[in-house]
Image (spheres, rainbow, N blue to C red):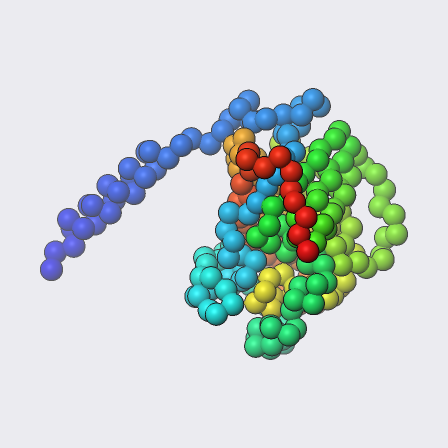
Length: 240
């Protein structure tokens, strides 16, 4: 069997896909607030709904759709003991998942639950309100000092800054109760999450979160996914 024609066809198809892809929006094309920063205000929802079920590649199962992983560079780098704990969490996920008990999802999990959320943006902070259980986040971007440092909470404490057109948010003071998804991926109270929000175009927001926890993982690792702006919703609704 000769594979040269097939290789040529695949190469041609790949070239056409690149050639026909829409170019990324330039900085001048992005919506901007009055202070010149990218305008992130609006209603957003994750595009990869499977991420909330499992951050890694996974097949369909009775409690989750199939999905491609959103972990950059391969599997989550667990320490050996933590990999065993993750497997135990997965086996007992129906009863053990804190979200199933109506506890708060934590960060970053709240960002890719399959419900919309709304961003309100001012010069010195962003407020996020989520349709799921009316959860909210307040992210100061003006250097506002963090109060109650060291006090753990379900959603952690968020402080942001602008690096060019990217909003960078450091989230600390997590408790050790939240999971990162419904598959049992977990962390300790030493979790530190660095989020990066970057507009790819007017209606697509790239979300990245770098996870650091030396108690559980062998190195920092990053997830990356896209959020879509809703234009057909005047506001989010209540969900119970």
